[in-house]
Image (tube, rainbow, N blue to C red; front, side):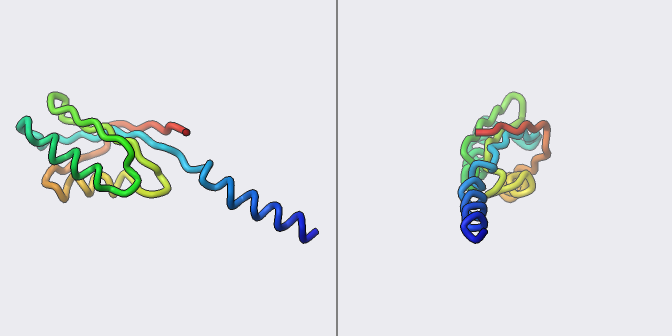
Length: 98
């Protein structure tokens, strides 16, 4: 009985990282008004712990961010752009398991 319990606990602990999901969201960043703005937005987003990929499109005034949802959240990501002077809102999202 005790051996089964230990096995179950170990299985749960080692499988938890596999349950983490990479999530991709697109943010609307309407305050980007010049071609240098995306550099600042991208730098701010890349500093957020858990963010693995950032693509910023000036013409569309948006940013697509892929992140580990165990390490950060959409709120933290939008707060990062706001702190950099470019308030953003969620445009669309999608979960991507890896």
